[in-house]
Every structure is written in C-alpha cells, then in structure tokens.
Image (cartoon, rainbow over the protein chains, first blue to last red):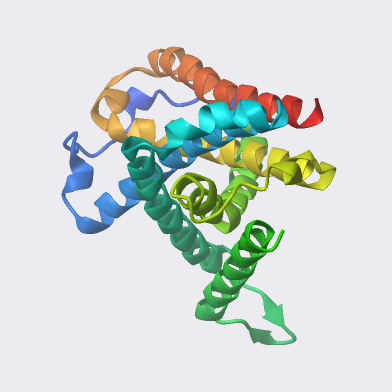
Length: 139
Length: 121
C-alpha cells in the first residue's frame, strides 16, 4: 500500500482542478504582480549572461573589452538595463518581504517583528550596494 | 523500503541561495555596468577583475543567480499554460515537463560552468 502510494502518483488529469482562463493573472492586481515578479528572473538572467560576456572580454585584456564596450552605449541596451534595474529592485523588495514570512528570528523570548526583518534586509542590501559602488568610485 | 531519491531540495536550495544573492547584489551591478559605465558616469575598474577574490565572488553570484532564475522561469511556465497543463494525462506531462526542465536547468548549469571556467582561466 505504502509502495503504491509512493510509486503510483495520482493521475493529474483525474484530480479536481478549477477551470481558469488562460489569462487568469490579468484578473486581479495581486495575480498580475505575482506574474510580474516571476518575470523579473528573465531580465536578471539576460543581464547575467550579458555581464558574463563582458567579463569574458575583460579577462581577455583591455583591448578586447573596449572592442565590445561601445555597443552597450546604444539606446536599446541602456533601455534594457533601465527596465532590468526596475525589475531587479522589484525582485529585491519582494524577496525581502518573503524573507520576513519565512525567517522568524527570536532573541531570547522575543520574536523579531516582520517589519524589522524587512528593514534589516534592506539595510544589508544598501550596505552591500554601497560596498560595490565604493569599488568603482574609490579604486 | 527504499524511497525514491528526490533532487527537489537541491533545486529549491539553489533557488533560495540564488534569490538572496540576486536580491542583495544584482541591482547595483545592473546600475553600474549596465547604466553608469555606458553613460560615462563611471569607469569599469578592469584590473579589479584579475583579483582572485573578485573572481570567486562573481562566479558565485552569477552561478547562484542563474539557478534562481531557472527555477523562477520553469515553475511559472505551468501557470502560464495552466489550461493545457491540467488537461493532459500525467504521462504526457512528464513527457513535456522533463525536456523543459533539462533545457532550463541545463541552461543554468552551462551558465554556471561558463562562469567558473572564465574566472579560473
């Protein structure tokens, strides 16, 4: 019996599923925001691949980098990175909000309130961002 | 009885680690390399990329974030195709789901391997 339960998964098509329209995530603002949050990963993934492409050329030498650096000054790439930045910030804020639900730290008998968990994450985020910025500004 | 091995915790672990790494560090990198440098506000510190610590940091950040993205691209696909997904029998779902998973997570693996290769050359 136990073996059957593990090995034979229930047939998905025979289970009850509410009928939802294809564009169900347009119905409610919260559904739309959920899908938008998932979409942030596409922009982040594209940025990471582009960044990796740049890093590859940097490791090949300064000349190799300057050869490809020019194309990222085009309006299209600037617009893409502008949108990607907005999406990435949205990902960060939604991630910290989720972290406050999952992480419930206790100090002695006192439970740290969720708003404080979010605030601590934002503080760490700003500190990490400032540290990376310093590398560009000071060095 | 031997339980079937599930790799789900591994993917979820990479998702969580990558999510935190991406949340903390990706926005500033987009702002700097994607906007501030091309717009001429700042210069890319090229020599910094030769430092081993920076290489380890970037390889870790890019690899983890790619796994996070793979997870977030793979799962919502079934929300997008909700109607099709629940109208199919389970064998058909496995038939479709597996190549998509291999494509998405395989892409992240190739990306992570490339990042490690570039940084260790």
